[in-house]
Image (tube, rainbow, N blue to C red):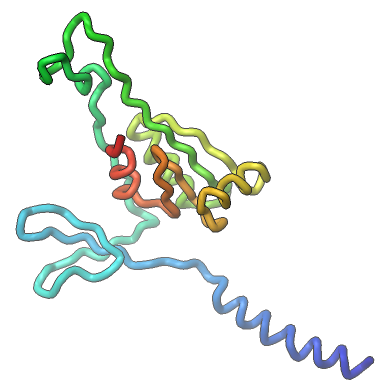
Length: 170
């Protein structure tokens, strides 16, 4: 019996030490650089050789804002131009479901992004709503937050670029 307890302790302590090593916060470098056409790129890998890049700290990064077209300006008339007075505008409605936790800083950035851009969204706290946690897993979320479903496209983590691409895809 004593031998069994010693063997268990011998396995527990190294396991705990290993867990502590990998339990630290995961931060990846983000690089911002401009290509030969003047397009700005954000990447988690360094830019091509010969390009100057700015390494960004995401904890202090501002949330991007983009002006989306109003439903009236996006509704074409019969000739393919702008809206006609008698035409009913075709509403551009984004469906955004955001799976979060209340302690996650990137969840707060995702919420701020959608609010700043005037995009309606619905949040589900996966720690308080077990049905939402199951739904997120069914949709492909692996328990990481934020997990967004934007117009049917699933995105794990906070990425303004990915969010914008999904919002523009209708």
